[in-house]
Length: 159
Image (cartoon, rainbow, N blue to C red):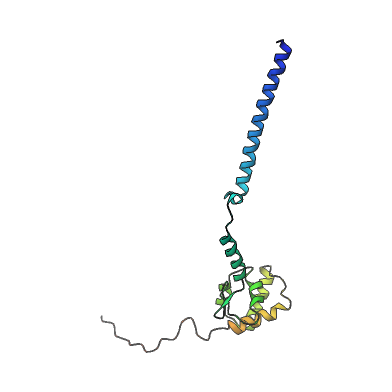
């Protein structure tokens, strides 16, 4: 074998070696990127019929009402319920709405405050529906912070 043929043979060997190295590095890089994007490797899991069924049920349960209560939020089922759910629970919990029992003027003032300071969108015709729902179903309680104590048996403290 002359030097030129031997040199070409060495170049081919080096070329094949580099090709294998680049292929391995490429595969490792792609696998690493995939793990970053999908760390649970969900694409390789077998999807079972039960999990699909549960997902469908969860989607249907979004607007499920049982015993007069909207299951997902806990709101009372009444006229305007879904308008309230769609507008109020985008930003905060339904529990926050339910605990703030107010009259019509206070609800409107609260909506204005949220629009001015919290970037609440213009509710348009939905505002009246929302306020009517809240005033009807979550009016102010007539009690103070606690019920008045009754039937108390007082005793004298001993010195």
